[in-house]
Structure formats: C-alpha cells, structure tokens
Image 1 (tube, rainbow, N blue to C red):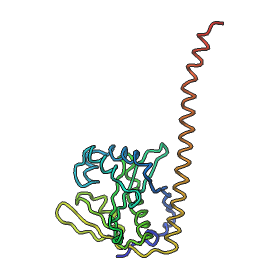
Image 2: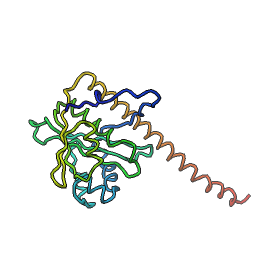
Image 3: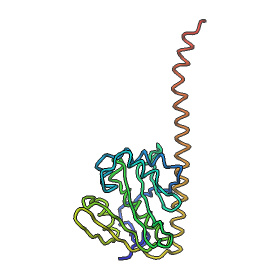
Image 4: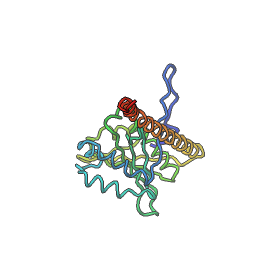
Length: 226
C-alpha cells in the first residue's frame, strides 16, 4: 500500500471541526540538551517501549549524544513553556548510497498523550522522507507497543510480528510539488511558532523577576527612616 501524508488526509465531515495544526519543527544540535531532558523524563516502561530495552540514564544520554543531526532528521513539538513534549527520530542509513529507506522512532511525554502527537509526528516524518527520495519507511518496535503499531497500520503499513518484536514497512509515494511546498510551509510556520514562544517566555520570565522584586522594594520603603 502506498502512503502520502497529503493523500491520506480526508475532508472533515459536516459539523465536525478540522483538526488544529500542531507546529512540528526540525531540531538541530542546539536542541540536544532539551532532547536529553525529554527522554530522561520518560518513565522506565516508556523508555523500554521507545528503545526496545530497559534503557538506563547513561544509555539514554549516550543515545542523545550520538544523534547525527547532519545525516538524520529530528522533529519536535514544544509547549508554550518551551518543554519538548514529543519528538521523532527519522534515521537514514549511514551508507549514503542506501538512502532508499529510513527508520522511524517516536516518544511522547506522559502529560501530552492522547492528543495524536505520535501520529502527527509520523505524518511529518513520512512527508520529509518522501521528499528526500525515500521509498520505504520502517519501524522496529516491541509487539506490546500497540500505540506505535496502531499508528503504522492506520497509515497503511504492513506489520509483521516475530514473537516479542514487530516490524512495520510503509511504502511512500514519490515527491510532488505539492508535498514539497507543504513541508516548506509547515516548517516555516513551526519556526515562527517557536520564535513566538521564545519571546513570550522571555517576557514572562522578565515580568516574573520584576514582580518578585516588588515586595522587597516595598519592605525597604517601610523600613527606611523618615
């Protein structure tokens, strides 16, 4: 089955609101510390599902340190406090001659689940892979990771189970002008959304500092001799 984030979307039914756009931006090496905080904050079972084994803090940190932002693509969703609440890793083969397939992995913070972020990140990664000339995207996951496998099946992937592990394979449509423009627009909107969140947070932090100093100023005025 062929898949495309654009073709897979259907028009909203009458009386039903269209899904809100989730700003998903590409992450660079300057986001490595936030990625580490996101992954280290995952509960042990969530890390087990994400990595396929019970990754401890040291192993999780090594994974973060080893991320290759030049070769692979990392996507993230930030909340208004600039906490990274969901991220996806689209990993390409280290052999530059074999960039016809890519592997997808995703993690979502516990407080941000149930909002469809995993599926949105999957669609975003599939669009990028498609535009990069990738013909097949695959997922290697534990069979008990039903949420991830459900996302893959819904996209049209073929899932093969081998005991405690499963592999999902998804064929991608060739890139089109529409798919390229859509990715460009979505990335620009996400970058703009991130910059706005940065400015808002800086303003709130500065305002919080001013408000914290005001009681001290009033106390100094009361204690000063008249």
